[in-house]
Structures are given as structure tokens and as C-alpha cells.
Length: 348
Image (tube, rainbow, N blue to C red; front, top):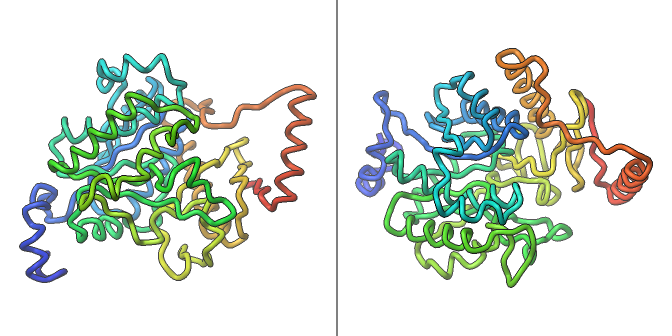
């Protein structure tokens, strides 16, 4: 098949790598991992659904960060999803630092370790880490084919910030959102280095050139020469911090290229039919062609959980602040966002 699609040279170069990714029907198998708790469960379900709708055969390894998320996923029993509970995943290294990190910081700490866990325990040739608030509009194979053709060991994606939102100095050049590690000597070398750094320090602050798990990636192309591929396809990693620089059209596309996945960073679900999309500037086209599809997917995910597990399930809705001071802060924020062009509250 590879010879027909890509030529004999490609087949000879990559068949050894893909042979253990094949299913009986001959299709490629992709392996992904993500992590979330019950507050992000509906986002995780939307992610899974998007992979089913657009991708090649896959397995998604979900690290469930609370029992409620794990129990619901177990009951849903999706064919292409493997649930990993915290007690299965956490080792002495992680437990030793857990109390020193906030919940968010601990999740960041665990990102690299979750990738390592899959490579060690499931005998897969590679695994791609996904943030749980991604949604695929096209097959991930488009991006993975680019990576495989590079013959590198690790795939990273740049933020590609719109200049007015450039946070490279504080949040990092690259985004921990879609990262692939091959189960090779070099792939594991990079991954183990990252795990060690996150074990040592992973906090939600800028300190000595570090920020969370993310700014560690800044120098990887030079620290690990010949091992790192930076994704070129602009449809991989479209996000609220870079969508302004593109012409968005139906498809969705950006500058004529298909949007493979979008990162729905900062989206808040206020109530059943109301969403705060982002404080970044979003065009009407971005909202129409990208965001509305995702809002529908979230609402469908909530319906599945309520129909299957608990009719009263409401995890994932933004917490409400009460009191006069909270209202004043809210109104001040709304006015500031309107003036910046970043007020994007919609009903669906």
C-alpha cells in the first residue's frame, strides 16, 4: 500500500516502523493520550467524537483525574478509548511532588509522564499527546504523515501567535497541545529529559526562563539536533491566539488550508445555552465556521452523559461568583473586553 501511495522508497523506509500499527483490515492505527477530570469530561468526549468522525483507526488513552470521570467513561465503554485511573498511573516520583503543586500545575507535570506511561505499558510505536480541549475537523493523519516523512523522533507545534498576542517570552514558543513521541532511543531520550525537568519544577509562573511544562520546549530544536520536527501545516494548532492572522472560510479553512484541529483554549460554558468563547478577538467567520460546531459537540456530549449516567450532571459549567464586588468586577471586565473587541459571549 505504501508503495502505491508514496512510492517504493517511502515503503522501504517506513514499513518497519508502521508494521505494528496495522489492523487486520490494513488500515493504520494511531495512538493518542490525554488527561482530564470530570470538569473537562464533556470536552474530552467532544475530542473523542471528533477523532472518530475524522481520523484513521485510533486508540485514545485517557488519564482520568478523578473517579467520576473514570466511572462515566467506564460506563460509556467506547470502543477506541482506554481509561487509566490515577492509582494505576501515579508512581513515587509523581506522588512525591503532588502536594507541592496546584491541581492545574500537577496536570501539567503529568503530561510528559502520561506519554511515557503509554509508551512503556502498551507497546506502541508512538503516541501523540492531545490537550483535552482540542477538536478535529480533519484527519490527524494529515499532520502525522508530515511528521513521519521528516524521519524525526518528536513532533512539536508552535503557537504561531498573532503579533498583538505574542506571549512567546512568557508562555513559550511551542504549545503542549499536539506532541508526538516515537518509541525510539532518541524519542525516549527527549521524553525522559522533559519528565525529569517537570518533576523538578512545573509551576504556573515565569521563573528563570521556565513556565509550567511548556517553556522547556523552547530550545529543543538545538538541544536535541536532528530529533525534533516542528509542524509546518498551519491547520494544526489553529487557536484563539493566532486565528486573527488568517482568513477563515467554510470548511473550515484558514488561508485556504483545512483546519485539522482547533484549540478551544479559554472557552467557558456559562450555562446550558450560553458560552464565553474567548477574550481574544474572533471574527464572525471564525465563530460561525469553527466555534458553533464545537458548541454543538459539547452539548451533545452533555446529553450523552446525562442520558447514560446522571440526568443532573453539570460538571464543566463555569463557577458563578456572587456578591456586589463580584458583579462590579464582571461588568468592568465586560466593558474592557468590548473595548478590545474580545467580548465573545454567544447563546446556542
